[in-house]
Amino acid sequence: MKVTFLGTGTSQGIPVIGSTHPVCLSNNPKDKRLRVSVMVEWEDSTFVIDCGPDFRQQMLRANPEKIDALLFTHEHADHTAGLDDIRPFCFKQGELPIYAHQRVIEQLKIRFEYVFATENRYPGAPTVAINIIENKPFTINNLPIIPIDSLHYKLQVFGFRFDKFAYLTDIKTITKTELDKLKNLEVLVINALREKEHISHLNLEQALEIINIIKPKKAYLTHISHLLGFHDEVQQKLPKNVFLAYDQLEITI
Ligand SMILES: [Zn+2]
Ligand SMILES: [Zn+2]
Image 1: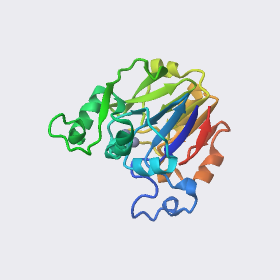
Image 2: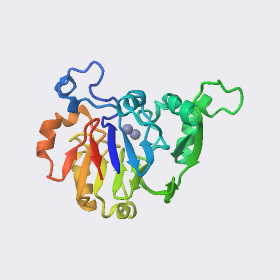
Image 3: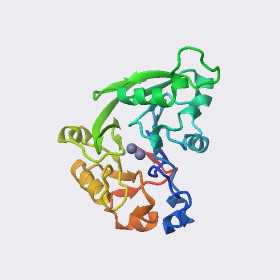
């Protein structure tokens, strides 16, 4: 399995438009973060989790030949706003299978009415095949995927476990039942926004606490704000099996 970090930034990305914060002015490519997304290549299937406003740029740089499924964690714009740019895949493959909670599909129908319209469709509009997921295991191309349910302040979000790899973003609280689904992982990806407390995101300390409970072999932090600091400085402070993810990082599991 190969995992490519397409984007590792929080909702505004890094640099933040107009910001003079030193991290936003950094020349280190590891301090430049597009909106959060990840591509998982497993057996012959390619999965992309979330489709934010940087999706086009992310697909140009990762350049997958096809996408077998697009999975959504939740409906926030930094995870969904790029949906129009799936069109090149639709033109090549036909309807693109999307997987999300029922509530997220309803939100997408409001935000992208023309994508889901059944009458008077514009011929170039994106086409999708809707797959509603609940908090129970499902398969795509016979590959088993386990949803992980958690809360982003009061909003339900899904993370996903693919074999020995799990991806959790935009979580703030998670129950013991859901943590129990994350045993024996090679790699856990989890969100860590910044050092200071935040109402809907784990901060660094809280992310490290969850990593310590789950005990994956390795953990990577994502959905990072410029306020967390410079990549190279933050990395030095982390435990030896915890890494700050960065855009275009590829890992093999
Ligand atoms: Zn987000
Ligand atoms: Zn969010």
